[in-house]
Image (cartoon, rainbow over all chains, first blue to last red):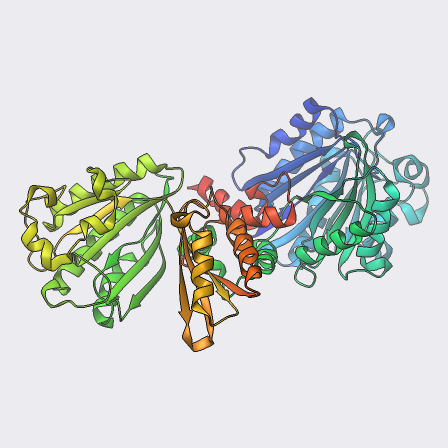
Length: 305
Length: 305
């Protein structure tokens, strides 16, 4: 398993205090085999999303260190923010990339979950592919009522954690750990402060209300900037490419006389997804990904192993 | 300089004899730090173009080995082909990719040029950014009259090589070594057989007739397909991005009621050029190239070295 490559996107409940954010991110820096790809703190969400890629062992070690910092610095009793959460370390998903399959990532989630509880005493729920109860495949079910409700309801058997005693950590709550498929977190920011427009467009584009398959989406306010956002997960980028998502949102936004201001990719994206969209816009024919210098270098590096 | 990455595209004067081609290419295979990305032999040109990506040291070692093979196997006195040439190893450009700048590649060209002459006794001319005489920035000036003229004219001071005695190698001629910027070979195919339209669009888009800076272009027929082509070199993709080239051609093509059928990238393209154009079309904000999984993996691999 030493050549296995995973993505891991831990979410921490602090998006405002730079000192705390830096302290949490620190253990992910300069660690062999653990690549800190990106971290984004959102003030409105009051949440920090860290994107890691690398080998399972060093990533797990770094997660433990960062979690101990988060537990020390974050108090959920005082935490407010737009994004639902039940813990200081709210969610830790493991995502297979290379030389490891979903089953491997499920095992990883379970092993790590036990270690996490033993070290931190923060109880753990398993979700998505790592769920031990079918209804817990869905994050929303585990997170229902958030920290404030769960701390009371955790004593009910149907809300017992999968690892740990049926009581939340007083300041750090609980943590949701799991394994899932790769997804692209993609936001489109709109030149309007009218939340209803963003919500209407989200409904038009997402699968659950009849839009594009494999696209989840909600409308959000970006208060600080006076903008709104269609915040999406593209859960199968091979079936619905980013260009199709953007063009559909542009089309819908026209109806409301609203401009698309910019788009954002949160976290990781595979080169194939980018090349696919670029191919559309440039009408690129007969293109081989090995023509991209860096992708050629990567396959050379693989051959040398 | 050990983490420097360069492209190198040596051109050898043999495009027909597969045995010789393979013997020349062999030293570039399975060499740590020297990636053989592509090699294309053209029968009409009677020329072999090898695309390498990797670290300067192993690439230079491989170039010396391959050159010794080329000198042994190629006799310019018997060589005929459509492409101008003065040497068995005709041109060796070094192109900066990462952790090395143009000055670094100029130094590389000069150092390698001296080593090349000491090992092979084939005299060297420096061109483009590595030129020691201003007029030699242009390949055409050095190659004027080709091997057949140069072997007589080399005794004239203005045609003296930059390294070596003023006399060509009897069978291997001379070699042109230099440093240049990365260029992208980019074609746009038009849905018309009218060559004049392609030529008019080429004139509109290329720098020499007043279009986009850093773009060279001509109009060509694609007889077999009943199409025409604007065939271009984008010599500075950072100054004029592909999206700008494509959009200008689409704009000009509209004037003639002609559709853009497709576009093609020949040879290598850096990820930055692709991301830049995709960023335009998707209105991508705050995107870091490390968010692309493969590019993150590549920098992880680099860190581990």
